[in-house]
Amino acid sequence: MGQKMNAHPLLFFSFLLSFFALCINRCFFENYFVLSFFLIEWMGKELDAMTTKDKVLQLLKKTPDFLSGEKLAQQLEVSRTSIWKAIKELEKAGYRFEHGPTGYRYLPSDVLDAKEIQQELRSFIPDLKVQTMLTSESTMKDAKLAAAQGDSVSKLFVADTQEQARGRFGRPFFAEPGRGIYMSLLLHPDKRFDELPQYTIIAASACVKAIESVTGRSASIKWVNDIYMDGKKVCGILSEAVSDMESGRISHIIIGIGLNFSVPQNHFPADLQEKAISVFPDGQASVTRNQLISKIWQELFTYLSHPEKALDFYKEKSFVLGKTVSFNQKGTTYVGLAKEIGDHGELIVQTNEQKMSLSSGEISLTSIRTQ
Image 1 (cartoon, rainbow, N blue to C red):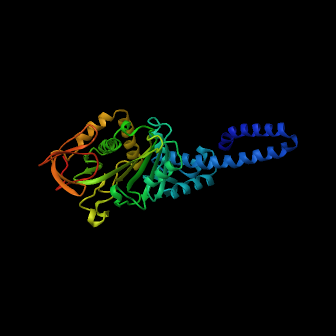
Image 2 (image 1 turned 90 degrees about the vertical axis):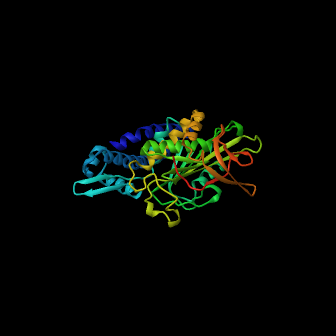
């Protein structure tokens, strides 16, 4: 019966195709009729293979006990062979199941799921497309390529790991497969630069808000785009704008986020163990990556409607204010007191000689202690 239900819209398509063929040339009617039903059978099988897998996963997630292949087959009105194939496809994708004498039982699996993320963000940005990958050279590169190819829809690229993970100034960062969040969002604002919201400020505030929401623990911001927990870096943000040479308007914005999700502390390279940390440093996450990913972008899209709230939260969560910082400008190193964050996200620093405003770049603190 499952096949019959999936075939209904295709039967209608078959009728139209056959009728059209008859009107053009009746002698081709039989051939088009046979071809159309061949298409129905083939497309119906493809739809069945896809929906069976999704339905099996949904049923097993909702059932704490074992479910037999026979019972799954009865509920979904498919063959037991279809159930077996669906289980194998799900396991290949990274989902885990316990196989017992009475059937299958779902085991917690932190698999990146484009459908789940897209569903969670639909009310915020209906046309968003989500693409998940086991491996990416760089999600920033993926987003840039999509923009260069004229992709006109908003798109989120999420990878299980990155082969060439890079942060600000092209610095490499540690990306353990299955234990991090590596993603880039492509937006199409079509605005002048001075009309754009402060995307880096908004993204940093959204990350902190989301992390605190799912963990109940405190996070803070090191100007301009680093997120810290317990005095160590947990997340970095990179935002880039692409302008149209003719109009001078910003055609694309790409926001990249690299976040240590559940990397155990001893998994970091020796030179990073005193500098880096994960949202779940013991490696045992209480939420999935899909949930935190969705929460981050939900907060970001909310802040895009109220950028002033993002700036207020950013100032509240900054741990550099009141601290002595150093920075480099045009080959000269300056040292001063971080006094305030301006209305455009700039850092105001008072040196012995003057008050300086930093709109970009990097600052250093002698020691980092979060509030």
